[in-house]
Length: 201
Image (cartoon, rainbow, N blue to C red; front, side, top):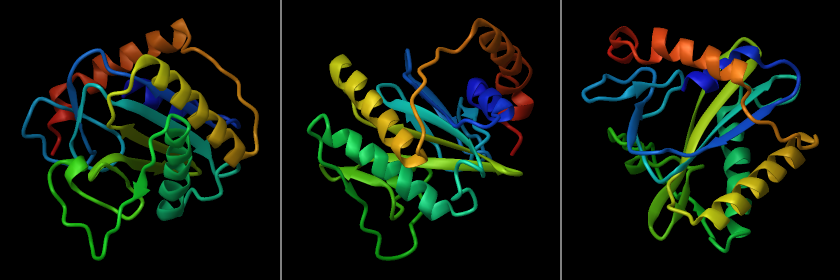
């Protein structure tokens, strides 16, 4: 969560898509949620998400590169379409959720459906949440499928390629630098690991 915030704060011209995995079970909650468990509060909205075998992502962009910054529906639709295409590359054919009325909100994100969420085998497998600040956007999301290593790599590459095509830009693979890790660790200590942040509501 701290790395995503750091990338969001420092984004300049080029968009950033970070894909990451979890080393064990964790729980995150949306910014405005009441914390009734041991969970880390995201800076984005949305509901409670249990993480373990899922693939997660953070996408940061400016209004210059992402003209849909003030259109939440288009933002989710376009990103989830990129995910849907990437899933097809590993022979997983997902579909958009069919929501006939306003979503009946549950405490759990995977049990609450919105029209642009992705479904597979009768279950919600992908959803996203967002935060705007000025002319910048951060979108965080997770793919709730336990993929094999080869499928993870192929999906991740295809997802990146689909987003690059959507943004009409090239791909530039980059690891998080030691300086960024240090800054994110400091932010985690002073914010994301504190009771003041995680139990603020």
